[in-house]
Image (tube, rainbow, N blue to C red; front, side):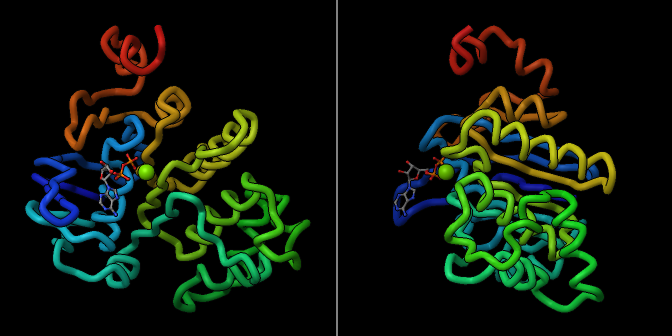
Length: 233
Ligand SMILES: Nc1ncnc2c1ncn2[C@@H]1O[C@H](COP(=O)(O)OP(=O)(O)O)[C@@H](O)[C@H]1O
Ligand SMILES: [Mg+2]
């Protein structure tokens, strides 16, 4: 589904991602975990096509998109839920969802109903301005809006940021449900390492722009070095 090979990215002359490689198979949930400043957001932006790639390749569904603009990657099935949600605050929940449909691909109202079933609070808040929702509800809306484009791969940048653990759990459970019922493929980056690795089947540990460990989530969760460094164990 996604293959990143030898990816290097920079801000000006300062390189922040170094020769980074990873892959996501169809139907997988994969987590990239790492501390603040590790390069998670830059990586997601590079994959989505909103940050330039200095070296390396990004392949989506076997097709090289490294030099393709962001909107073409959307039509190839990528949808990014950016860090900090970025819903359209003055617009209603329903309008935010409709905008997520991006290009009419059939019955938008049926897709909206599906999203309201996934996150029932969005049905209750349908006519309300997105900006009036709580942080957790805005994250639900941001995810639902991305799903409205019927992505083949959902890219999630720190969905748990600023949310109470119980709200994070609710959102991750919805993602897991969508994964089971519709085979949703997800690549998420998170500082919340334990929650992310519990949702994902595989993970990568990112440290100052490099992958320092990778493997099955249960192995990473019990890895002594990772426990020491990140899980306080
Ligand atoms: N707009 C920017 N200009 C310059 N440096 C940046 C910019 N955004 C991020 N960085 C730097 O790039 C590195 C990676 O940042 P980021 O990708 O946001 O990490 P994360 O999402 O893991 O917190 C950090 O050292 C950060 O300071
Ligand atoms: Mg970030």
